[in-house]
Image (spheres, one colour):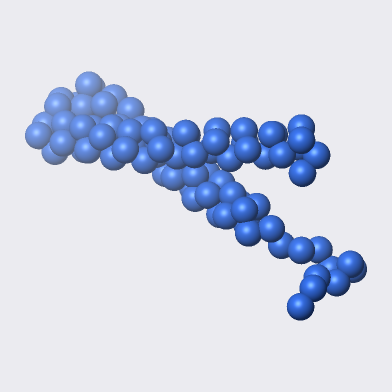
Length: 91
């Protein structure tokens, strides 16, 4: 079965890139939100006192945010670079 000239063919690579971009964007939002929670918790601890719970929250949010952000940022840049390369090569 051939693709009709009137219907655009869906490129599985572009579909996969779009999925990775969506996941990357979501992970970045969540990771940055975790960093924001850590900053707010730090200032709460700074002014109200660093209890065990506040310190645990800060450390947990920083570690979890880093674990999410590192691969999400790399994946986001990889998708952008691949799309840019496709545009430059006329694909």
